[in-house]
Length: 223
Image (tube, rainbow, N blue to C red):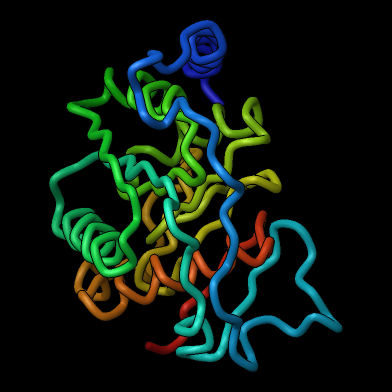
């Protein structure tokens, strides 16, 4: 990790701790812990052989569709980039939030210098979940997320190289971006970010988080 990025992340973490939500923000009021409404279908993850931290699990297609967030689920969509895959992911998250009556707010980074500040802005809101869409956010998230272990993150369409237990990712062979100078995967395919796959990514990822299957990669092998 570049020293300049690490230093900036440390300052960002400190700023997030010092600055809280304003008293006029509804999200600053007491909020029940979110729960899963419904149950995972057979084949999502085998409880008798659970994945180890940072491992990859390949759930049976559709095994997540019976799980929904409880009322008042607070989610921040953190996004960066105007490329087609990112736009497809953003659309899928917004449509999912509308369908599930999720309280969704969006923080969009305007450019490279705004990546860390955008993460800080999302952290200030203290949501139930921060959903990340956009490869440019991967390296900054890799530095910031270990400093905020009580905040849950979901990365869709990419993954962190070494995620902590509070970071869950949903990925597939056409995505697979991991940052840290590793470059784009040889299997990367912008065309794989279909509306159907992106919709599956957010639903499968949230289902995993709500059922405490975190710190792993959910792999959408076929969908």
